[in-house]
Each structure stands twice: as structure tokens, then as C-alpha cells.
Amino acid sequence: MSSLDQGSSAVQMLEVLYREHAQLLCATARYRHRVPPEDVEALVHDVFASILERCPAVDDMRAFLLGAIQNASRYYWRKRRHEAPLLEEHEDTADESTAARLDRWTTNLSLGATLAQLEPKCRETLRRYYLDEQKPGDIAEHLDTSAGYVMQLLSSCRKRAREIYSRITRPQA
Image 1 (cartoon, rainbow, N blue to C red):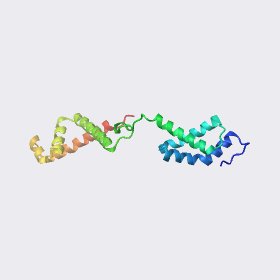
Image 2 (spheres, helix red, strand yellow; image 1 turned 60 degrees about the horizontal axis):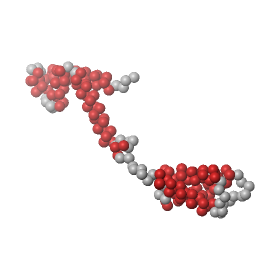
Image 3 (cartoon, helix red, strand yellow; image 1 turned 135 degrees about the horizontal axis):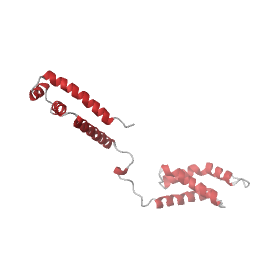
Image 4 (cartoon, rainbow, N blue to C red; image 1 turned 90 degrees about the vertical axis):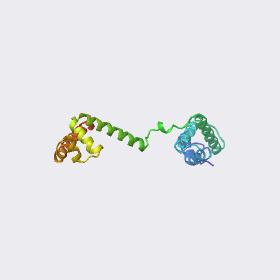
């Protein structure tokens, strides 16, 4: 039974109805009609807004509201009948493996650009040392020099590579 008196305004009547029946309507829409939780409150507000617009003369307001939420829920599902969830590749958030692959790809491109800007002797020495995992003595034999010079060459080449890499990856201002 509603605690309305005959002299109350439409807004006051709506406030009382909302306080008394909103939880029931939310629960009915969510559990009986399986409306997703994120859409339940909007649906209930639409029901109360329609009451405010029409101001129907009703004997049993609770039964009327339950019928209204049932109709609103049916309409909700009728509108969404042909909707299908997005495929994973269309989701807004990328999965971590995709983000990691993009990071690796960006790093590899930056490293490739860095190596392309190094002089051939540095590029060859770094490739032999890091990719081919040759020892400085083996590299020295190939270059016909000493292992100490190879270590010095590696040091200066790494320094130049770091400078080029930081210039390439620095955000443009």
C-alpha cells in the first residue's frame, strides 16, 4: 500500500513511489527478466519517467509498476535481439600478448634503424659479438687486430649505438 495522500503533487508522488518500489523493480528486471546489471537502473528510471509523463489513474500502483517493468524489459530484449557480442579482435582493450608483441616489434624496428646508421665496421663487430656470440679473440683474428682493440671498438660502438637509439626513440617535442 502506498503512503500517498490525495493532495500530493506529481513529483512528490513519484518520489514516494520510487522509494517504495525502485528496489523491487530493479530486482525484478535483473533476476526475473535477466536484464544486465549495468542497464537495470536506466530501465527503472525510464519506467518512472513514463509515469511522470502520463500520470495514469491506477488502483494498484505496485501491480502497475511490475507490469511496466515487465513490458520495459521485453522491449529492452526485443531491441537487442539481433545484437551479437564483439569478437575478441574488436574489443577496446588489447590483450597483454598483443601489447608485448607490439613492444617487441617497435624495439626491433628501432634497433634495426640504429644498426643501419652505424658504420659498417661497428655494425659487423656488434653483430659478431652479440648475435654470433663470437669471442673478442675470434673477432680480432677476423679483423687482423688485437683482442684489446676489439674490446675498445665494442665499447665505442655501443656508445654510438646508444646515442643513435636514444635519438630515434626520443619522443618528438
